[in-house]
Image 1: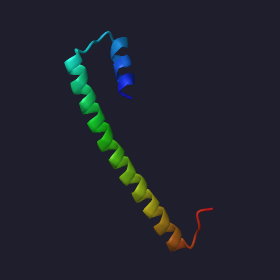
Image 2: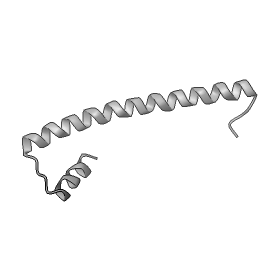
Image 3: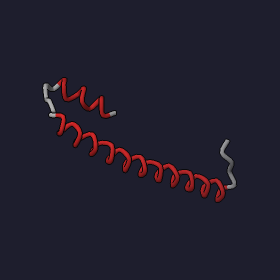
Image 4: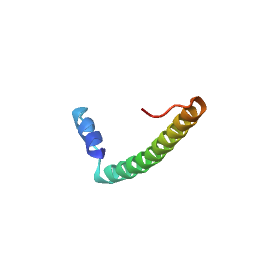
Length: 62
C-alpha cells in the first residue's frame, strides 16, 4: 500500500528524502493498523446486529 502512495507522489512529481519516506511509511503503517482495527470492530458489530435481528424475527442466514 505504501508503495502505491509513493507511485502517486511520483506521478505528481513530488519527491521525499529517505528520512521523510521513512517517517511517512511509519505514519502510514500506524494509521493503517488503526483503521484495520476499527474496520474489524465494525464488522464484528455488524455481525452481532445481524444475529440480533435474526433472533428477533426468527430468521436464519439463508
